[in-house]
Image (tube, rainbow, N blue to C red; front, side):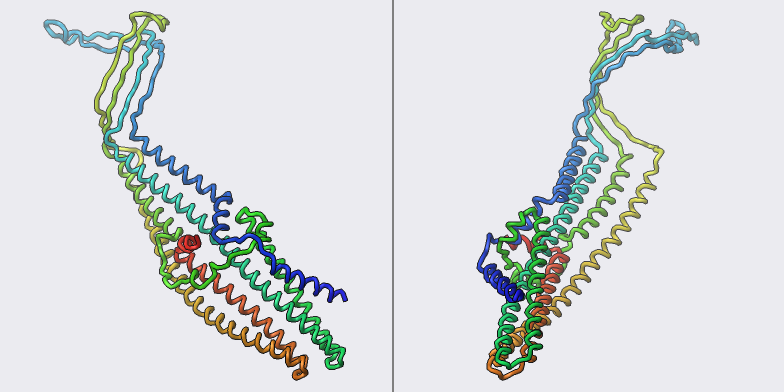
Length: 450
């Protein structure tokens, strides 16, 4: 009796759930919400802003460098210089005398200006910063791609669970009808009690499967809420738009990898480019630099501590060009450049492997998709045949033309084939999305949803 009541309540709930629908939920809205709410996405976007500021700082090396200097010194021992005073006589001699230069107290203050005119190392550092900025953008694109892919996978799981739930609803309604037929036939003495029990068991299994699939669907929606920040209430009440899983949207005719759109490939290329630019920066360290220098200030000399003594200040200034050309250095530029070259060579080898791996995976996925499509089409035909046979046999059983065992067998076979079809359809979608992602076309796929 309890089983009959439970079955009736569940069937009523199924019918009510089919009649209720909330706000339509689109895949693109879920992706946008996830990108806006996930903390790790905000973090990598912050890294991009930091990289932009670093590039700006590198550019600022071209700006004038203006500084104010001041110092006050006491000289316990005044420096002495040997002066050839004999050379100043009308008749030059070799006479020399030690003469002290300066006073006990000295202070100086002034403005120093330096404006780079030619400095190839600055240009190279700016180029490094630009490449690093591109790398941060690639890292952000990779993080966003991973999140988008996770949302799409969860959306696919919701679609699969919804399809399974729909099949479970039909199974529950059908097994309920079969059970009622068996109970009527049992009262008429036309079927055995064991056959009625089998019908009830089959119906109970259908109820259990419906409850399990319903719970699985709810759990997947909870996970979707975690990914997107959308309230669970909206996800539970809303109606999902599964049109992205149509054949037109998931077409994968051109699956040649778009290498510039694949973050792993792009990242390796940029890192190799950065190493090449770092080699250039090392070489630029020893190139001549030319700049404009200027100074404007004053010095004070006193024999006593008197910072404000009038008449003791003397102006000082100069302007001119400054040339610096380093001939020798303690560090070996050649050794450092050779290290960077080896690192670049290793990265390029990894890049070749990554490109080959992406291409090979696309070929494998194409073959898997072709095979799954074929199997899914056969399973779809089988489901249609099983469904037709089951409908006919239910009528034949009602008329006493077949036995209960045949009807129960048909029902179980239909349930198995329907489950297999759902699995194949979901597997096909998973592989198609994986192929789209592997080929670097995920962004285009998402944009097509808008």
